[in-house]
Length: 382
Length: 100
Image 1 (cartoon, chains in turn purple, red):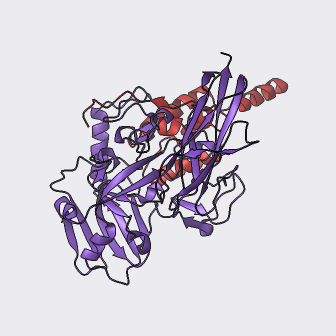
Image 2: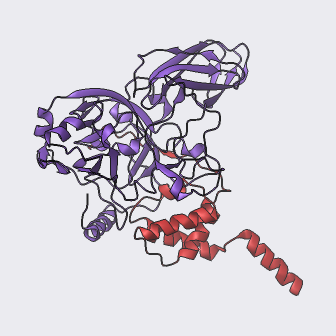
Image 3: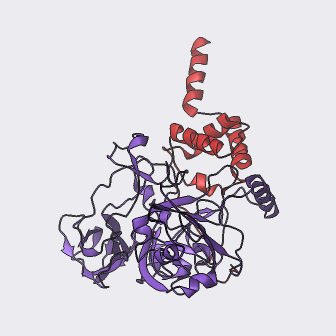
């Protein structure tokens, strides 16, 4: 949202002074959240610890948070409006009641930060140094974006939808604005979510969050205030150069070639081990290896697990239904034959035949890490 | 005497920036960076001199006014350079009973 940035900046400075913002990285509590891995607390960039990933639906209080710019001031739901503008015959200001009157749909979809796993790239790249937990799976409920656009009399010539949220950049930090092609906007799974796991989305974009199943988290705009139908994709930092990926892979450490960067649409195939925990020690005996796997707009076909550093692989059991957009949980019962240190690995394959690579392509912004996952554990004598 | 000066010069170069510059850089970090975000965002990263320089330029483009950019850069390279070990991020306190 465009705001008087000088005013906003002054207000923030005053707020920071009032809170006696510490120059030390001291203890921090995030309202509504369990203990989380804190990459940044102002604004909030919180990663989910592996131990919370034991259910198909990730609870809201354990779900990761990525803020590019500070959260907007508290929103009064009764006063909140979503403006529909641009190439529509009936421009509108929709209230939450208007959105609730439209048919409501629920989609289960995995949301992953585009930079999840950035910390694993070498050489290191700037940005939040996410490990493995900037991802979660939730049930999102609300009207279809397509129904909202059709109701407003969408013009056939409109090829993109621009989405803005209630948050504003500080100083001259660019506003968080995104657009997506009309085909994805009209997809029946693309929603304006009013609920997350049946609850208010809170820090995850209350009261209206865009849900773009199968696409990277950057597309899922929070606190939606405006939808504009237009011919061209949006410009602005968060469309270009932000959130672009090299069309042709570059050698590790090489600068991007701006003309060869493309907007990220969709997500690769990936799996993550949630148990045992990396670095764990356990007494010799039967163990359950667990994890989750997902593949953007595709579904997961299989997950293979190795307990010997990738020499031999065996198929894990997939415990939940095969759906596009949502992750599948996998398990493998394993009894180590002897004490010692083991490298456990997981490798997912999706319904389109994509397989997790050993070495994901390095890229200058550290996006889309999907290397075969691995944890190390020590099995001790009984 | 010349040999002594040469040794001192080489030693200073290999130690990197002097303590006074680093202290100035740390103060500049608080002055220039804290208004918009907490320092964890910086302290969690390990970047080369060139990459820290690009970050400072990016932030200048977004409205940050530096009074001592050189000292800040020296401080970042000396403390959070890509040759420095990574420290694990903090874990927040339980906020489930804290009002949202």
